[in-house]
Image (cartoon, rainbow, N blue to C red):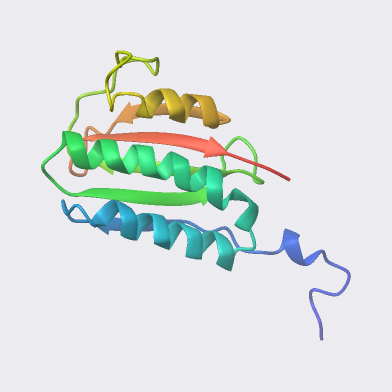
Amino acid sequence: MNVNKGMDKDKVTPPWTYTLQLPHDPRAPGIARAALRLILAAHGRTELAEPAELLASELLTNAHAHTTGTYALRLAPGILDPHHVRVSVWDTDATMPPPFGPVAGAGDEGGRGLYLVRAYAEACGAYAMPVGGGGKVVWAECGGR
């Protein structure tokens, strides 16, 4: 008996979420970006690889640069739209990032990461994690059809 007869294959695909716990190591953001590309390819979402990787790169780099503990990358379907992907980074520092505006001076080499996140994301935000290790989560969604 075929219980899926007449059903759209994409509509019965189970939801997915991946979390990659990372050590405070300068190689960790690159490893996380490679995992992101593999995960999106496995789910047939390669068109999201470039924008999702840019968002993850900025969020992971901030977590590495501004904390001394571990951090984690989480990928999941978008909450706003299932055709989106949500890229979230948790870190141990409870300090919330400043508003996502340009904070770097003209000659500065850094300080534009969250501005880029806001420019490339469909939506983004941050929230505190008062339990389970504390810290915060900074997230961004990107999409396509």
